[in-house]
Amino acid sequence: MPQRNSRPGRRALPIVMIAAAGLLVAACHSSSQYGTAGSTTSKNKNSSGSGGQAQQVHLAISPAAGSRSADPAKGITVTATDGKISSVRVAGAQVTGTLSKSGTSWHSDWTLPVGKRLTVTATGTGRSGRTVTAVSSFRTLTPAQTFTTMIFEGYQQTYGVGMPIMLSFNRPIVNRAAVERAMTIKTSKPVVGAWYWDGAKTLVFRPRTYWPAHTTVSFIGHLNGLEEAPGVYGTYTLTQTFKIGQSLIVVASTKTHHLKLYRSGRQIAYWPISTGRPGDDTPNGTYLTIDKHNPELMVGPGYRLEVPWSVRFTWTGDYLHDAYWSVSEQGYINVSHGCVNMRPADAKYYYQMAVPGDPVTVVGSPLAGTWDNGWTEWFLSWPQLLKGSALHMAVQAGPNGSQFVNPATLTAATATAPLGTSRPGNSRAG
Image (cartoon, rainbow, N blue to C red):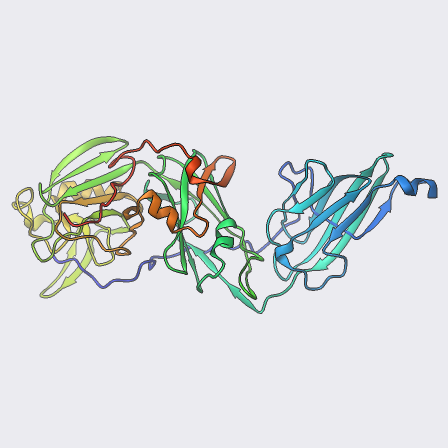
């Protein structure tokens, strides 16, 4: 039946924005042994006379005490001369940092938050064993222009194995490479993927192959203090945690008039269907489920009907849904206005399991799929995905976080379509 509703836009669904508004004093080294703090003046706690001054450690902190508009991009640096740094702590914001192997320098990991008063307290030990403390209090700049970022995924929500991480910006991003570098991903199971810019205001992370089922994903965008264009800064750190559920995959053939349903790597159904009739053909491609309603109000020329058990996969109104009126044609002929018509019991069964991000592949159609008509990231091959990154680097993520790697150093992927990934060229017309 006709299902092509007005297109709401590529990222038109409700979006969750998570901002780290209340920042706490925190340790700044990965081991939490080193915090953040600083000062341009060293004070010897144990010196008993001028003879000890020559052997005491000297600590230098940048930004210097009293700075009123410190550059967030330069971060905090602590250096030690004639000794080693014992600890660094920062008050006023959550700032992490890394101590050099020599123990003589410490630098913050990310850009500093804007418009904040920070106090850095560093301690060091000289060759004689004497301890010195240095303190620096300063203020970071307050930008005249800012940008904001929103993430689609909701906290602790469950998504399908094809779901990309989707970020939207309120203005075109100029320094896209810096934005990519500011992103970190932690996954409970090892994942390889890449960032992809869909225009200048949308950034997505897509795995090279489908997510492993039942993976927990934690995302951090270190955007507070990041300068995306001259004078334009981010003002908060974006965080989110969500889950990948079971593998639930549909392959619908417009030629055989049947649908294969796979769950947890095993085919569990082979159902008769009816897809778009000539002129209203259901387009080829590997899509993702977007949302679902029972019923969904569908309106078109000469009809207005509430359709049960409807799961959407394109913006222009293609659904998998109950079509009790076309059961006799299902399995034999295409009679719909673009949707995948199903028997009531089959539609209900699928609907009750479906979550956003479940892959839906349409094959055999004379109509090619259209980029951005739905979540179409799986139209892309792995080389195409990498090409859309400003860094052209792959991302390896796991329980300890993520890192950028040269794609040429990766072992070949072993996943195959349709259970592990999408087929190359899946959106082309049949």
